[in-house]
Each structure stands twice: as C-alpha cells, then as structure tokens.
Image 1 (tube, helix red, strand yellow):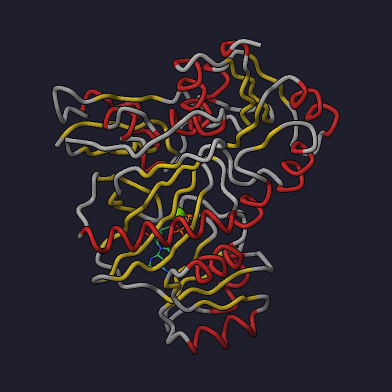
Image 2: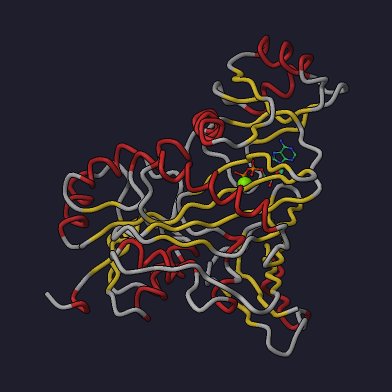
Length: 351
Ligand SMILES: Nc1ncnc2c1ncn2[C@@H]1O[C@H](COP(=O)(O)OP(=O)(O)O)[C@@H](O)[C@H]1O
Ligand SMILES: [Mg+2]
C-alpha cells in the first residue's frame, strides 16, 4: 500500500473534524467520517461519510474496516465505542484517554498524580452534598456536571445568596462536582503531541479569554518565564505518559503568580490553538495527522504574535464588520443553523 492509499477515520462531524480532514488531505491522506446525521460541517471536507450512532456496532465495524487509523474530534464519544473500535484498527488517542477526559473527577485525580496543582473540589450527588460542600467552600464555587459539559454548559456559579434547591433542580444531573472558584491572573492552554512513532512536540502556549464560559479570543504565544515553562512542560509530559498518549493533548490551566492550577484536558485539537493554522509551520491539525500516522513531529516555533477570535452565533452573518488586519484569515465552518453562542467560525491575524 502506498502512502497515498492510507485512510484516516474521523469520529465526530464538527469543525475540529472538518479542519482535521483539510489537513489530512493536504498531507496526502484520504478521510472517512463517521457521526450521526445532523448539521455536520466536516461532511463537506472528507472523502466519504458514514452516518450512524455511537452504539451502532455494525456500522462502526464497517467504518473501522475501511480505515487505517481512527481519531476523534468529539470528546463525548462513548469510551466503550472507542474500545470496541480498537479491536479492529488503531484508535489514537485511545479509549483510555477519553475515559479520563470525559469525567472531571478522573482528570483532576490524574492531574494531581502528574504534579499539577488542583483547586479544591468535591463530588456532589445530592442536594445535601451541595449545601454541605458549598459551605466548606465559603459559597464561592462552581457546580459542574461531572461529564458532558462544554462551552460553559452544565455549570452554575454558587454564592451565598443562591437557592440551593432551585440550583439542584436546574442542574438536573445526579453526578456533579463542586469546584472552588479560582481567582486567576490569566487562563492559558498548552498543547502537546506524541506521534505513534515515539517523537513528540509542544506548541507555544496560548493565553485565553472566555466570556460566559465560552472562549472568545486567544493571544499567542503567551509570554512565560523560561523556568516556569520548563517545569510546566515536564508536568504535561507526565500527564501524557499516564495516559499513554498517541495524538494530541491540550491542558487548560489557570495561572496565578507563578502557579498553574489545573482546569481540564482535551485529547483532541483545541479551539485555543486554531491560530496555529496561520501561525506555525505545522498546524495542530497537521501535527495530529502526522502523530496518528506515525510520522516524525517536532516542536513548533512561531516568530509572530497572533490573535484568534471566535465568531459566535450571528456574528458570522456580519463579517463585513470584522476588519482587524489586512492579513486576517476568516474561517467559516459552514454550519447550517446559527444559534446563540454557537461556534460558527474564527478569525486569525498577526498582532
Ligand atoms: N473553578 C473555576 N474558577 C474560575 N473560573 C472557572 C472555573 N471553572 C471554570 N471557569 C471558567 O469557565 C470556563 C469554562 O469552564 P471549563 O471547566 O473549562 O468547562 P468547559 O468544558 O465548558 O470548557 C473556564 O475556561 C473559565 O473561564
Ligand atoms: Mg474548558
């Protein structure tokens, strides 16, 4: 089989899948998408598409038999599905990585084991737990569903004025965590990749600004003292080792003075590294493709500063107002339905 005959299977039809498919094509690979029917922007960028549910073992089996390696762009694909697929073909990152990333308690426990600082948190399974632990956290905390949250969804801020009963009804989830609110100086994210051939790389750090729990813009590279950076990278590598990572690992962090406090991981491309499409020789999507295909990868450097702004909701319908820079690049994902706060595209430009 020649290089060009290899096919990458992509699970999940969102913008991350779309941009992965575009990178795969550029690098000479074919792509086959698998995801449920719907408003899937990746559909238009892949060679082939199979629609099916995450538990349709027959269709998943056909999908797996047609590809050389499978990668996931969507964090909530059942880990069991990934495990079953791994019996047929290579799945990078593995079902194990996803089984950790899908549960806030598990990723926090592994973060602590890797050497990250983790702010105080408690598992909440009842209204009584919520009342008890909110008090312990001085009513300055956030209730989060333990799984299935994204873009700030599945989170409620707790203060001394709240009606706990109302909040417990509103979150409507019997497995939650309560997290101490972190008074951070800034939020950053770090992206590490490990190829299946054993080579590895980092991207320069991103500094992230969220509004209502959704990433609004990223500035990169984030400036960081060399000593802190070296220490941070060692901790990230430890985490990746515990995950036995093949593919990408993003870690979201809160920085306070010289400390990094763990927030969460994502074993997939990450919104805060979309600037790498213009900003690095290899984008995060290129590095994902190279990693899962066992190519050599190496640290990505960048000589300019970049800003990436998300186009949320109907902003995508007003692109003429977004004139930030003569060299800006606008990426529109091609989602059919515009929803409030939905990620519809992004803009990257040098600053
Ligand atoms: N414990 C916390 N303290 C302060 N801010 C937080 C905390 N947890 C979340 N946030 C804010 O909400 C954003 C989204 O929360 P996160 O836990 O990353 O969930 P999601 O899975 O939706 O990205 C964070 O990037 C941060 O801005
Ligand atoms: Mg997050």
